[in-house]
Length: 160
Image (cartoon, rainbow, N blue to C red; front, side, top):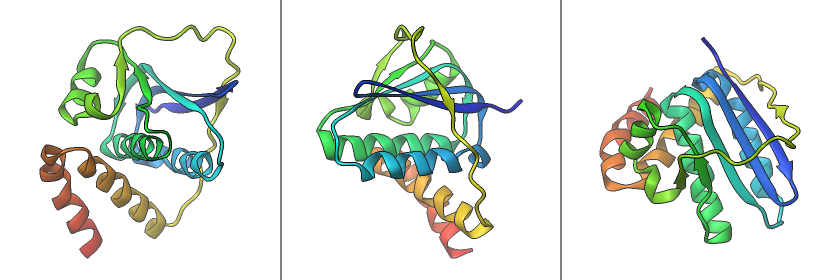
């Protein structure tokens, strides 16, 4: 099963919703979205809805880590994640997301949001490899434990 990544903006809130199973092949649009989001010099907050997400691979997690790092650097605040209890919540805790995100188990009221699906962005194999490596580097930056788990991946991929 595959998934989708949707975004909506309400006033100064960027709302990102993940549905289903998200793998690296669906993350090109998310990477472009993050690039565009932080190229603007305006104030905003970020809410990430993982209520309907079944699984995020390490590249998707790495892009979320990058989003948190860049948001913290530009605003000195943490983005918020809404998630149900379960395996994905345990994964987020294992990769130390509780240190860089506000994690809330109840979703925000979203009845009035107008979601737009992020388009898939075609990338060459070299570009895909580069953003996969960068995503894993972001995961490694969150904590010493993550550094241990993800540094070998980034070093091996960049040697290939």
